[in-house]
Amino acid sequence: MTPTITAFERSPDGGSGLARDTRVRWALEEVGQPYEVRGVSFSALKQPAHLALHPFGQIPTYEEGDLALFETGSIVFHIAERHAGLLPPNTEDGTNARARAITWMFAAVNTVEPPILEFANARLLESDKPWSAERMPLVEDRVRDRLRQLSAHFLARRSLGEGGGDADWLDGHFSAGDLMMVHVLQRLKPSGILAEFPDLAAYVARGEARPAYKRAFAAQLAANTGKK
Ligand code: GTB
Figure 1 (cartoon, rainbow, N blue to C red):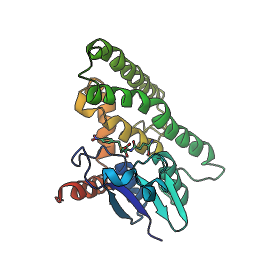
Figure 2 (cartoon, rainbow, N blue to C red):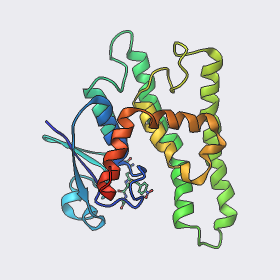
Figure 3 (cartoon, helix red, strand yellow):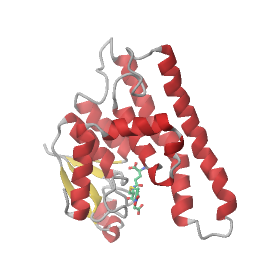
């Protein structure tokens, strides 16, 4: 059954891929699952029909037969559980690596994304407040702390020669954990903070170079601009 996801009818980012439907599109592209998209207007997000799918009135959602999901972490996990390609197999050999990949999915949304969102909100919604200039360095440093820690993880993997010599990804092979982490980090690109960490900027670029990401990006751009 072809799943249907929701996305902004017109994303405020104009199709730069930052809205969260992009991570769901990317996951579906990685596993080769075709999907349909229903565009939702800002007013429709808060109407009963959409609230029945998403109690917080947001995008994306995911519908497949009787199943309706919200929250990108859960949606990407669902896709990864049902298709090969985003999580190591649940076999004796793969089960620990699978648990670690799932841990990285949680780390992306639960540990790395919150200070990034705080920073994005401070820039977009609070820059006109009288206390904004004083607060901003504190908010930026919370982001830098997380990036430093993530960068140290990659450095440690490299120096230990882990992952069968592949330290390009969080735990050896590309997984749903990387997909979530790359999309979370992308939100920092316009600010210049990501560029302060060249290894993490290169990690994000590796994600963006994946053919599945390119297809997902092109699809959301086309939906927002009519261009391919
Ligand atoms: N935790 C949820 C998840 O991961 O699924 C968060 C979902 C979420 O924040 N959805 C946003 C939304 O629906 C769109 S992606 N907002 C409308 C509302 O809450 O009323 C967030 C987003 C929006 C715009 C940009 N941008 O313009 O750059 C980037 C990201």
